[in-house]
Image (tube, rainbow, N blue to C red):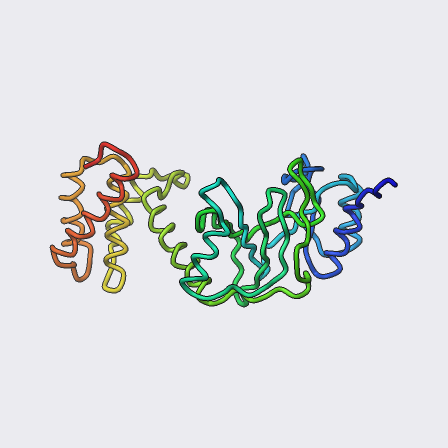
Length: 277
């Protein structure tokens, strides 16, 4: 007896009727159709969804847009025999507490998509490699019964209408990691200066604007990181940050604290690229 083919459009409409914004992906893949606007044209209006799948094909995979929702996905994967997101989840649960049961989808590579709510927050971005084998998805996700050449997305447990709230301790870990990432990317600030200004002019203006108590350490770390990132001679960069601290920081931080900032930035940059000491 032949198995009836899955009508992806009908499944997509069911998601839409439950309030989820969905859009079609290429058959057997994770990317939008050529010429489409991907998750930007996702809709939770049944008729609109029907039109999209009629246009691109009823056998298209189903994408869910997570933008402007309070939903995030824990993407737990097995990368190698020694790197497993399931091990990382266990380590987190051993250190804190058990994550609540929630709507969970088995992915084609035998990983899991665990759906959670973070009330009052909308992530609007993905945290890649949050922990070994764990990504946090906040923009979009393949929904069941989508399929790839590796297998299908299959509902493992729970109901799409009953999604658990992510524990506060996990949200705080996400916030901490995000702050660390932002501090690191400060060193790569202004890769494309606004029209009419050079990258150097922007840094000089920021330097002259200075800062005051309450933001001094973060600001000086950012400024010194930009000097080093721009390949400035280290000794001259140190001399400049000393002048900046004395002239544009109110009140200046003490020399020992400034030295700690300098050493911290240099250590981090040395690890990122060899040759700066």
